[in-house]
Image (cartoon, rainbow, N blue to C red):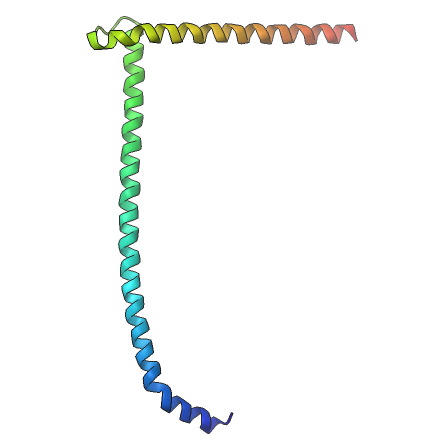
Length: 119
C-alpha cells in the first residue's frame, strides 16, 4: 500500500472515525459513572454488614456478661431465671468433659512412661 493510498483512506474515513471516537468517549463516561455508582452501593452494603457484625459482637459480649452475673447470683431478673438452669447444666457438663480429657492425658503419659522404662 502506497503512502498516498493511505492518506486518501484517512481522509475518507476520518469523519467516521471521529464520530466513532466521540461515541466511544460518551459510552466510557457513562460506564465510568455507572461503575462509580455500583462501587458506592457496594461500599454502603459492606458498611451495613460491618455495623451488623459489630452489633452481633456487642450482643455476644452482653450475653457473656449477663450469664456471668447470673451464675454468680449477682443478677436477679425474673426473665433470665429460665436460662440459669441450662447455664448451670452446660457448665457442669463442660467441667466433666475437661476432667475426662485430663484423665485421658494422664493415662497416655503413664503409658508412654511405662513404654520407655520397658525398653
